[in-house]
Length: 242
Image (cartoon, rainbow, N blue to C red; front, side, top):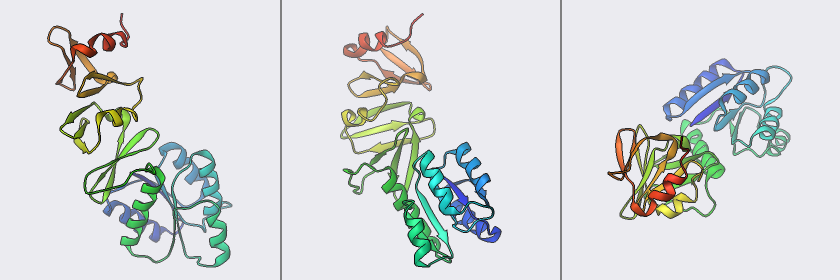
């Protein structure tokens, strides 16, 4: 998960960056004033922003939060020394996911980040249990793995297969196990990119290397995925042919 830090106190910014890295997240930038913060926000599209309220320059953290939310709704956690009612009331109008008063423990920051991500991207009907569950965002999935939410961009998915009551999402780097039916997962995939090749397989068409029509297999990243006879004709029709 990509996190933008907006903090004008150098020592505290370093501490926040260290906390974020220790928690296993990625810092895409540290800004001490509004102009740089807006540039980093536009360039990196962070998943979450840790925002100080009192910043260098004309823009406050509250001003930035309004600008960011106007461009793209993004979870924001305010981190500030101000604990007065007036500042809190103004900050609350921007819809932050947490309001932390300095100093605070790393564990509290971790909980705030995880809750912010869950509330921002989770399907309201989803209920976590001891198994991994998929969370839908607009262009990616968040898969719960123990105490972390791992982001999978849709274009990173090579293929999906069914095994018993589980769906296996395959990427180039690893495999994710979801307790979800293939039919339910297919509803959350872009039908212009993903196609069913077999009753138990869905593939990313842009990642297909070749198709062996005699052996009824589709090769993706060096792996052969079955091409069912019942799906072959419809699958071929949807390919751009020369």
